[in-house]
Length: 545
Ligand code: ADP
Image 1 (cartoon, rainbow, N blue to C red):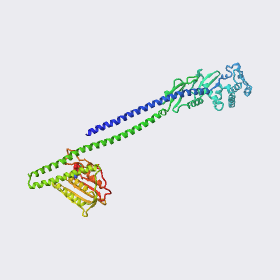
Image 2 (cartoon, protein in one colour):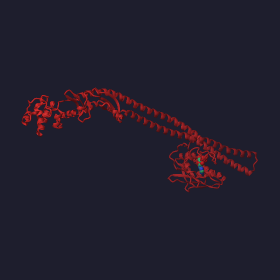
Image 3 (spheres, rainbow, N blue to C red):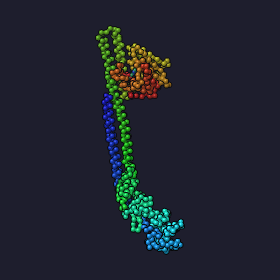
Image 4 (cartoon, rainbow, N blue to C red):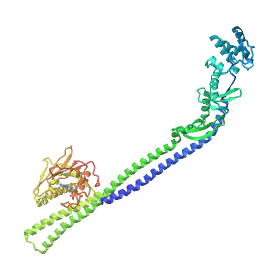
C-alpha cells in the first residue's frame, strides 16, 4: 500500500517536474534566441550608422586638412652661396640691421624674404638674444613665406598665438621624408596625417583629428564606439573586449577603414537578460508552488490511505467484536433452553449473558454515536447533574468486568460533591470507554483508580482514570485520539478494539468545552484526565478528527 502511494507520488512528481524542465529549457532557448536577435538587429543598426558616420567623417577630415608652404632653407653664408642670394655676402652688421628693418626689402632671388635672411645672417655673426626675438617676430609677420625648417630651428619651439600653426607645421616637416605622395597617418602627438603638396605640406593636426572623430562618433548608438584602422593592419577586432560590428572604407587619401565596435555588449543584450530574469523568477515560483502542492497532495493521499486502511481494520474489528459476544450468548441461551445446565451454572450463564449484552450495547452505542458525530447529527442534552452519582453508577456498571480479571477498581470522590452542566449519557459513555480501555489493557490482579475532583482552574472538574497497564509511548499520545487509530500492527494487537473509543471521548470533551489528556510514565501505567468547565459556554456539536 505504502509503495503504491510512493509510486503514484513519484509519477505525480514526474508529471509536474518534467513540464517544468521543458518550460525551463524552452525559456533558456527563448532567451538565447532573443540574444541572437538583439545582436542581429545591432549589426543592422551598425550598418546603417556606419554609412552615415563614414560620410560625415569624410567631410570632417577634408575640412580638417591644413597646409603650410614649403620653402627651401636659406643657404649658409659663405658656403655655396648662390649668386641670387647675394645679400649673404654682406658682412656689415649695420647694413644688415638696416636691411632687416626695411619693410621694402623684398625677396631674394630664391624667393626668401630679404629681411629674414638679414636676420639669420646677423644671428650667424654672433647675434644676441635681441636678434633672435627680432627674427622670430619677422618670421611670424612673414609666416606665409618663412616657415622653413631652418627658420623654425633657429627660433625655437614657441607655440603661442600664430606660432601655433608653426608648431604643427614643424612636426609635419619633421615627418616629411617618411611620406608617400598619397599621404600617410603618422604617430605624432601634434600631427595625425600628412601629405606633401606642391610647394607645401598638407596635414591634419592631432587635436582636430580627435574632434572630427568624436563629432562623427556622436551619431553612433550608445553601445558602440568608433575606430579608424589607418595602417591596413591594426583593427578593433584585435582587442579582446570588443566585437567589430561593421567595417566601411572612408573616402580619404591614404588607407582608412572605419570600424564600428560594440564596446558595451551588455546594452545590446539588456532586454534579453531582463526577459531571462523574469523567466527564471517565474520558473522558481512554479517550482516552489508545485513542490508545495506535491507535498500537500502527498500528505492528503497518505492521510486518505491511512484512513481507508484504518476503516478496513475498523470494519473487521467491529464484526469480530459483534460476532464473539453474539456467539457466546447464543451458546449459553441454547444450553439454558435445552435445560442441560444445573441451577448454579444457569445463574452464571444469566450473569454472563447480561454482561455480554451490556458489552454489545456499549459497542453498538459507540458505533452509532460515532456515526452521528461524524455526520454532525449528534444531539447533546445538557442538564445540571450530580457528577458524583454519575461516576458511582458508571463504575458499578464496570465492576463485573473488573472482577472477571480480578482487577481492584477504586473510586475517589470529593466530599463536597461536584455539580456541573453536562450531557450525562455522554459523560457516562466517556467514562465507560476510559474504564473499558483501562481494564482491557491492565494485567489481571492490578489496580484501576477512578478519581473525580475539582479542576486546577476555577469552575472546572476533572475525571482521572489511572491503570497499571503497559502505558502508552509519548509519540502516540496525540494519535490515539484519532478515529480508528490503534497502537501497533493488526498482528501485534492482542486486545480487541475498534479504534473509535478515545476519539469519541475526545469529541465528548470538546462538546463540553473541555479536553482529554494522557500521561504515561516510562515505568508503565497510563492516566487519562478528562476535564471540562462546570458550566460549558454552549452546547455545540463536534466532529471527530
Ligand atoms: P480501542 O478500541 O482499540 O481501544 P481506543 O480509541 O479506545 O480504541 O484506543 C486507541 C488505542 O489507544 C488502543 O488501541 C490502545 O492501543 C491505546 N490505549 C487506549 N487506552 C489505553 C490504556 N489504558 N493503556 C494502554 N493503551 C491504551
